[in-house]
Image 1: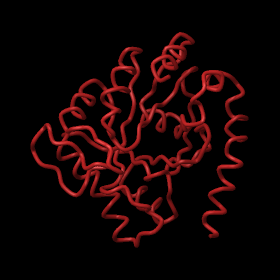
Image 2: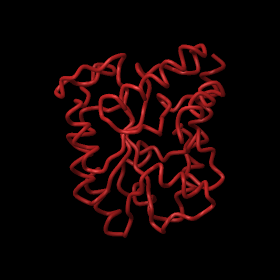
Image 3: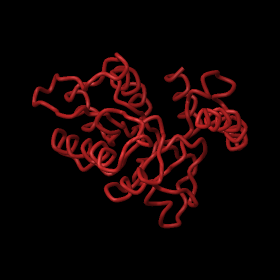
Length: 227
């Protein structure tokens, strides 16, 4: 689905834009070029390198990969990031190859916790620690962040705002000039797994579809918080 979906978007003239460039453009009150999209990949699973990386390269597209680093990083380039829920992760060599090809790397905490359940010092250590490790290990400036599972509260947002230029949430929607750049909306591809629905990405119906899908999603989450 990934390769065929990217191919359809490319044939229709869609091109990827760097996340930080898009945020800077919108923050300045300027419009993005027509048919622009920003692609983000969370966690740093091995499949980001094995599947997404070559598929995006095939169509001249790039992405920002948000990485959970663990508490430390050795100097072995073949060392893989600590697994999340038993899933294999990318290696530092693979991440470096993606950066060399024009992909961006963002921070995604040290251990992928629910930031809304942490005290301020713990949350800051998670949010800032990943940035320090990535910058040291990859030799790049890391200026974007994604909340694990998209969950954040005011405390997490304030910490992210002190250390990054933007942060991505799990709010379902399209980013506009009115968006909070420390709680950026995203279009989660889980809702586009079938081809007829995927094709809505390239139509004016996309915002309406996202609003429709957000209703039961938000209801479930509100109910879970009350339990």
